[in-house]
Image (cartoon, rainbow, N blue to C red):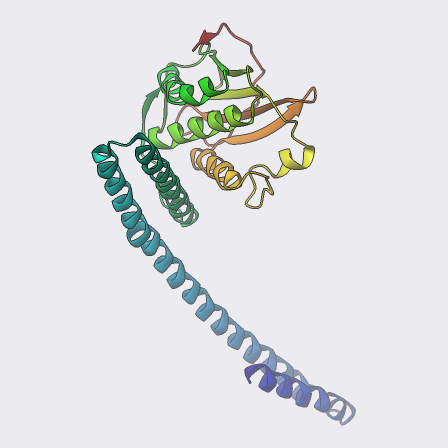
Length: 293
């Protein structure tokens, strides 16, 4: 109805233009033009402001829903499943409960990622920075994934040299980042293969490259891997990769995936060692002495 009224006003005004012009009433024509322009501008500004306020309220409601209703209920499910798992004596039932629990934890990670994304875009601080020992953190994540690597007889090699011993970051996020990338490399690696985690540091930045041999990634897959619509074949993989991208974004770093020599794929990400640094510098690749698990 509002659009119809605007169209009617404009139509009437346009019909008056030749009349006013040929009757020599240019001043009246100018006045009407300015008045109509101001009227439409004010009307649309009010409409935009109302829409903006509505979107802000919807975002606030969504954030509250994520942070309380969904997050709290998922935490309750995880705790309940952990209690149930301890009471089960049958290994098969216990294994099923463990799988469901892992699924709930994955859902919790996704809820946290969405919540932090909205907060981050609102200019809020979403990370809890603390001093972290890099080799210790990576070694811990490697130990957490060795069970999956052993199932495929995949060897994990970490090269911790030439890195600053400490850096400032959110420990929970960094653990999730390394674990997700390592699991992705393990699941997509060939059996009896090797995964190399290379690292180097320079100019206040730390760079990590996780390389594995597996199904070749196309240029399109590499380009879309960390986007919101990655079109990756494995269900849930795209969300997990987008989660990793968000963690890097929050820390002011960058991440990419690449393929070389056909079946060699690698994840590379660069992150500031210091909280104050927000831009990543290019670092030359360095192959260092390994620490093998």
